Image (cartoon, one colour):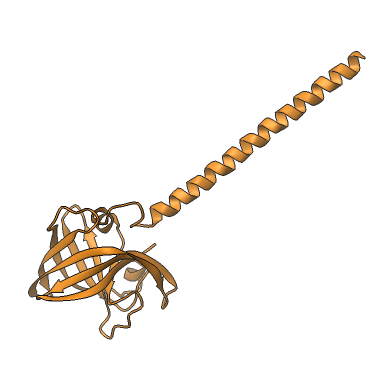
Length: 183
């Protein structure tokens, strides 16, 4: 009889311990799934950030074009913001790249110039960026007014991009554009 009680107690302890360990394993898996989703949102530069912050906090290129898959004969304008110096370097590239280093490695960064930038309004979600300096040694200034979020796939490189619909005003000639960066 004592043997049966001891055996039953041991089996109950083993069952309790295995349930406890199974619960810990599920909590661990759930925690890593939550971490994966937070990593994904961190990789999307416009998700959960105001436009004003997203544009200058990303160390990657921002591409400005007529639309995400617009076919330009003169290349795509690529903007690289430097938050510390309040400058933006503008390049002409043949296509969108996943990273700045990838474009650099492909030797496809044709530097047009470096401009200083500032925000002309206090709106975090729809800022107006004022840029001034020289492009190809020609003095210029332009404004880029952020309107709304946009996302899609750049089909030439099968690259998911996210960003903003903007109005670019260059030499008093406003044009609707998109300003996007890879996810």
